Length: 158
Picture 1 (cartoon, rainbow, N blue to C red):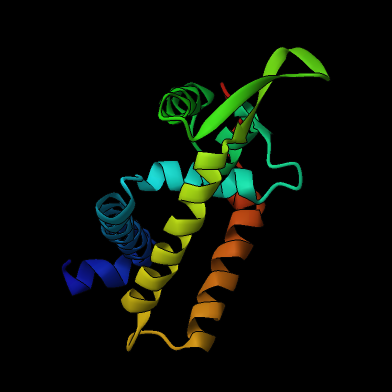
Picture 2 (spheres, rainbow, N blue to C red):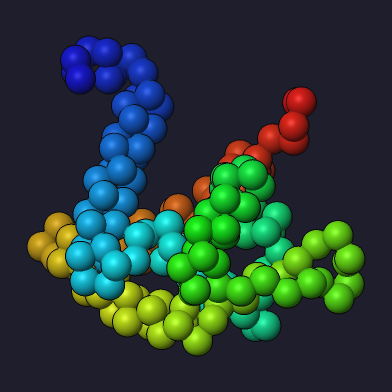
């Protein structure tokens, strides 16, 4: 990018670079997980959010919020992950119109194995680039931004 332009629009450059970093990380991790486990990063992320829950279950709408994508897109993802036997659906006992998704034993096993690969690849990516303190600081900044009102998804039609 032209340095003069970057000086005049630092927010633009910052966001573009952040998105480029996210894409590069996604591609590298997705490739590694597919090669070693036959598991896409989208599947891994779905299992990650399920495994973080105390009951290991979520509604599709809640998963969509965590993934920061549409409910329709999440529903299609859930259909694919379910077809591959990594999650299952059950009727939500508190809402007849909704269902809950849970990891299957195969899903939990796949997640645990893939998580080791994921963590090793992240360590390899950051090795020699960011120290532990810098990685923690980066995580803290990202977490703060994601929790802010700025990162809240706008309501439909607003």
